[in-house]
Amino acid sequence: MDAKGAPTEGREFRLLWWTRRRGVALDVGLALLSALECAMQGIGFAHRTGLPTWLVVVPGALAGLALVVRRRWPLAVILISIAVLPANMGAALALVGLYTLATTDAPRRVIAALACMEGAGTVIVTYLLLDSDPAVRENVVPMWFRPLVALLFGVAMVLPPVLLGMYIRARRRLVETLRDRALGLERELGLLADRAEERAEWARGEERRRIAREMHDVVAHRVSLMVVHAAAVQAVAPKDPEKAAKNAALIGDMGRQALTELRTMLGVLRADSGGGERDSEAALASSRLAEIAGGRGQDGADRAAAEAASANGDGPRLTGLGELVAASRAAGMRVELAVEGERRSYHVLVETTAYRVVQEALTNVHKHAAGAAAWVRLAHREGEVAVQVRNEAPDGAAPAPAGARLPSGGNGLVGMRERVAALGGGFVSGPTSEGGFRVSAVIPDRAEGR
Image 1 (spheres, rainbow, N blue to C red):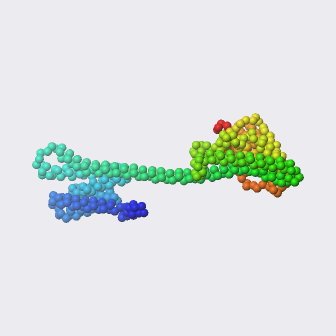
Image 2 (cartoon, helix red, strand yellow; image 1 turned 180 degrees about the vertical axis):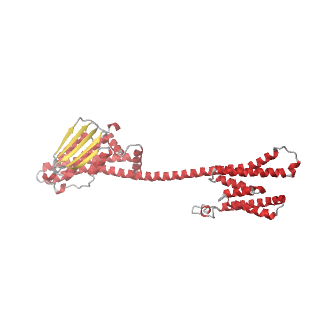
Image 3 (cartoon, rainbow, N blue to C red; image 1 turned 30 degrees about the vertical axis):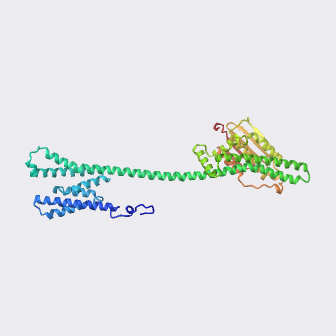
C-alpha cells in the first residue's frame, strides 16, 4: 500500500514478461488445464492408433504447457496448436492463442491467415473423426451433415476468440487514446494555470506602476511649485512682506489643488478596485486580466481611470494648459504657451496624457533648470495631437536657493514615455544643441475609440 492507501503490487511486481501476479497465476492455470486436456485427448488418440500411451501423452502435455508463454509468443502457441491438431489435441491452445494474438498489434492479415489455417485443420480433423465414428456410420444421415458439422466446429473454434480479441484490442486502444488526451489536457491546464499566474503577477505589477505614475503626476508638479514658492517666501519675507504674503497664498492654493487631485485619483482607484479593501490586489489583477481578455490593450487600466475622472469632470484636459502655465509663471518661471491648429476635443485619455506630459516637463524645468526660460507648444494636427516643452540652458539663470532644490526620483521621463507608448504614440526627450532640454510627444487621436 502507498501513502494514499492504494495498492502498489501491480506497479512493483515484474517477472519476465509479467507485470502482475494475477497474470502469472492466470497463465500458469491455463497452461495446466491445457496440458491436462492434451494428455486426456492423447490417451484416446493412442488407443485409436495403437501407439504407446506415454509416447503421445508426454509430448501432448508438454505442448499444452506452451500456453504459459502466450503473452510473449502468441504466434508460437498457435503454431503448436496447429501441429498437434491431427491428434485432436490443443483446443485450449487454439482458443487462447488466437484470442491473445488478436489482442496484440499483429497485422490483421497474419491473424486472418493463422485463423484460416486453424479453422481448416479443425474442419478436416472433425470430418475425419465423424467419418470414422461407428455410431455415425450406423445412422443414416444426409451427405451434407458431416461437412456441415465439421464446418460449424471449425467456425466455432476460430471466430469467437478472434472477434473477442479484436474487440479487446480496440477497447485498449480507445482507453490509451483517452488516457493520452487526459494527460495532454492536464498538461495544457497546468500551462494555462502557470500562464494565468504570470499574467496575474504582471497585472499586479502594471497596477502598481499605474498608481505610482498617477501619484507622481498629481503630487510632483504641485509640490514642486510649493517648494519654489516656499523658498521665495523665505527669501523675500524680510524685504517685501506683501510679496511674501502673496506667495504664501499661492502655496495654499496649490496645496488645495494638490489635495483635490489626490482625492480624485483615490476615488478612481477605489472605483477600480470593485469594493473591499481586503481583496484590493486580487480585484485589481482580475480587472486587469478582464481588460486583456476583452481586447482593451495595455492601456486598459489607464483608460478606466481617465474615463472615471472625466465622468466626474475632474480629469486634466488640454483646456487647462493655460492655468498650468500661469502657475509656473507665478512661481517665477519665464514660460510661453503657443497653440497651433484648430482647437478640438480628443478622447479623454489622449487629453490626459498630453496634459501630464506638459505638467511633468514643466516640473523638470523647475527642478533642473530653475530660472531658465521655457516654451510650451501644443499642435492640433489631423489625426493626432503634439506637445513640446523646451527650455533654454540653465547656465545663465540665477542659481536656485538651497531650500528650493528639489529631489528627483528619475521616474518622470519613464512615466511620460510609458503613457505615450500605451496609446501608440511617439515620445522623444533629450538635450538640445543650445544646452537646454526638450520633451516632445505625438499622440494619435483616439476619438474613434470612445
